[in-house]
Length: 76
Image (cartoon, rainbow, N blue to C red; front, side, top):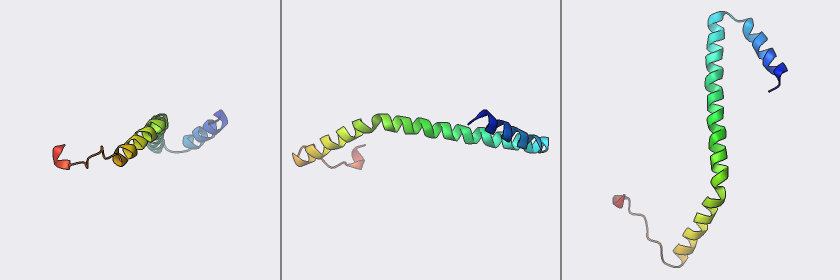
């Protein structure tokens, strides 16, 4: 976000009562924290995508060769 956009948001917030400013700040902090979590998740997933594809191909190969066994939930 550009500093101009941040300045606009700050100016808008300054027109609000103090209690409302605090509510908006709390909301923005929580919202930004959620966005940061989503970015971390997206990056982690993107970094493992090729490994997931490799493991899926191996699983398909093992199933085709009869080397795979169905998962028994009671064994977990």
